[in-house]
Image 1 (cartoon, helix red, strand yellow):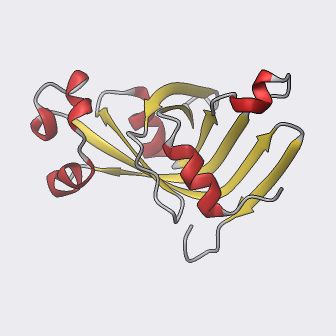
Image 2 (tube, helix red, strand yellow):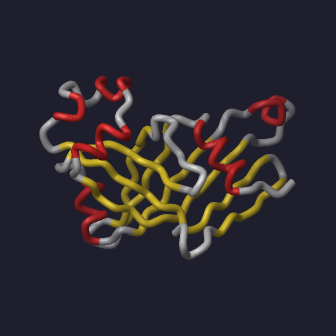
Image 3 (cartoon, helix red, strand yellow):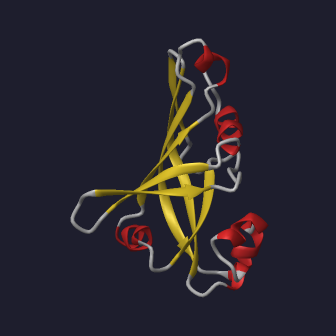
Length: 151
């Protein structure tokens, strides 16, 4: 069954953590687990909070191309032996250091990592705009490409 962008966005909201992969200065790939706090917009945008001393911030400053990898719950298919949902997002990242944007995307659960909330020194919001989303679910796979105006 072919999935729409809306189907993929809805599924990604149910997956709290993903791996954000960026390109390091030496050309290697570096990954870091990130929480999307269930904020995935229908248009294909994800937001992540981090600190400005994170390697991913340096990487994105040099090269905004990133990958996000999600693994969904196994569900019924997983119970009968077929793999569950896997999603890979190819996107462009933007670093945001604006407190108004922090407050717009803030979730109280984030205080586990950022004890001073949106006032945490060095806080950075990473916005990832999807360009292409590839998914696998059981034996099915597909791709959603976003129009240039959305990506």
